[in-house]
Amino acid sequence: MPDDVTKPSVPSQDLDVIARVFDDASVIIHSVDGIISHWTHGSERLYGWNRAEAVGKVVHKLLRTKFPRAIDDIRKEVYAGRTWEGDIVHHHKSGRPMTIATRWVIFDAASATPVVIQTNTDVTETRKVQEDLAGREAHLTSILATVPDSMVVIDETGNVISFSSAAEKLFGYSSREVIGRNVRMLMPSPYREEHDRYLAEYVRTGKAKIIGFGRVVKGRKKDGAIFPIELSVGETQWDDSRIFTGFIRDLTSRQRIEDELRQAQKMEAVGQLTGGLAHDFNNLLTVISGNLEMLEGLLHDSRQLELLHEAMEATDDGAKLTGQLLAFGRRQPLKPESIDVGSLVSGFSELLRRSLGEAVELRTTIKGSNHIALVDKTLLQNALLNLALNARDAMPAGGSLTLDISRVSLDRDYAQMYPELLPGDYVLISVTDTGKGMSEEVKARAFEPFFTTKGVGAGTGLGLSMVYGFVKQIGGHIQLYSEEGKGTTIRIYLPSVAEVGSESRRGAIKALSRGTERILVVEDDDRVRRVVVARLTNAGYCVFEASDAAGALEMLSSGEPIDLLFTDIIMPGGMTGDELARSSLLLRPGLKVLYTSGYTEPSIANRAIPTVNWLRKPYTAHELEIRLRQLLD
Image 1: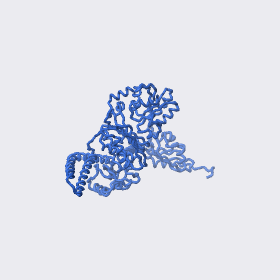
Image 2: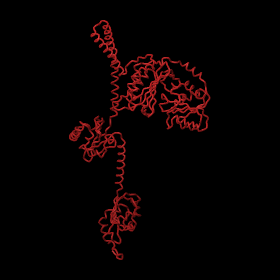
Image 3: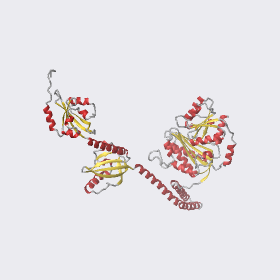
Image 4: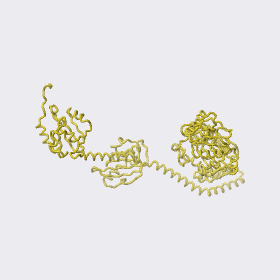
């Protein structure tokens, strides 16, 4: 259209007709600049202003409108010939805010004076209800997302209509894969075939099979695995139809614990049974074997003697069987005797070597003499065999197993760290492997019955617990040292027969030479560190202490005179004892260093440390004092 052609204006009578037709509704007609030209009775009721008060006013100022986006953008959209609708906030004449669902339409956009016809509906209460429902739904969703039990909701036909996050984790399906499908997919036979029949019968007769009851049934995961579950089902009416909500609890862990308990009870029952029968059965075997022995001297026929010897071997096997049953039920009575542990291990090493296989090298070291302990020979052999087999399994690619036999004295200071341990002389058996080691979590549970890191069927979890029980039963002590990737050492302390009296030990300690040098003790175990500091202080030394390498380096950097660094090899914090020593020698050239560790030898930590600089835990005050004087003098 040429620029000089004047656009027609909107006929006012047309707008009057529109306003009269929609007078009961809230309709506002205003110009491009927002000046109100028509204000219906519906708007008067909604906002409180009468027509005379509203007409001629700017609608957005009168109602103090709050838009969801810029008003200019909305106007451009409307003047382009499109409608616009959305929620805005208007204010009543009294000042009360209202949520309004509004719709804007351009009337006669080609006119020189186009107008906007605006219809408004108060949705304040509706939006409040919707927000409340949304909040409740979010709250319910958060509960269902965190509750440990799984939830599955189905309709009357058995089709799933809701599947919680816990159910997704339990069954392995996403909600998209389950919703709309029959809940039978989560069940194995025979529950799968029975489900629809039970549900249909309940809907028809009201006779409940599982509604309102908790039942132990089976579930089926996406991968086909069958597992035990506890199922509780509730019912509710919704829109003239029934829906059923099932809460599901995984019983796998509980069933495993119950299985282990049943196994323990079974072993207890076997122990009680064999304990009662062993006496009478052994009496019978004694009679049989005694008579066979007497017959042996009366027989001369080779065939008869052969039959008699076969019968005698059978009685020996019967006696062994009784012993095995007693051992299995842990009713085997102890038969302690004075045994040279070094000789026992030497004679037993060939059997251990065959049990370990060719990939594992067995080393046996016997230090000193007089390794006499009061112990049950058979049970000690079984304990060592258990430890050897565990070590072999920890070294699937091969390695070495070291058995170290020595005699040690545990003084009162050391015994105080372990309330059940008595001070005295012990025969120490250290069993050290170069396997994969244990994490802190595994170490904490290593002696627990039935705990095992091996696969199903590969271990009972009883090996270490039986060793622990045996050692405690004979009045000994057992310790476990292990680091992931660095191997494991298990140390068994057996009470020595020739025990040195406490008075002679005290006399030996008193006779030790004292020192005045300054010693820095670095030990992460608080109990051990307190004992070491007390020993050194009592011997006259000036002692500084640190719980890790960082604290030790800070002290060495302070300029405080230090004559000797006494450090554990394996420590937390990222720096080992030998790394600490190297850093310390850069700060203090000529500093003396003494290392200690719970491992059998320093080589277990892959360290090349001279013997004079090495002290194995546990050490006595006498051993510590001798080593210090060797280094300091």
